[in-house]
Length: 74
Image 1 (spheres, rainbow, N blue to C red):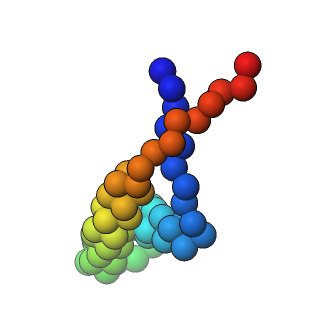
Image 2 (cartoon, helix red, strand yellow; image 1 turned 30 degrees about the vertical axis):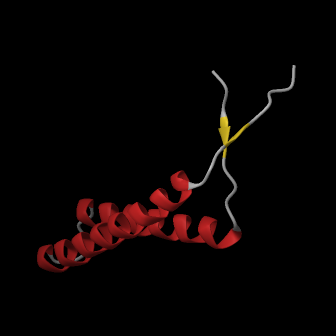
């Protein structure tokens, strides 16, 4: 099966890393117990929501690009 290659510019890479970080931090806060329960849930849910909502349009933009077939070296 041929692999598909996509080009990402620096800003796309940074945005994807930031949104994934926010999503991970939110999940971590939801699982942690350093804050009060109300604070932890509020911050954790907000980070998860923002991370997920901002990842979706970026992923659509990346996968909407025309792909190039990558040639595998033998």
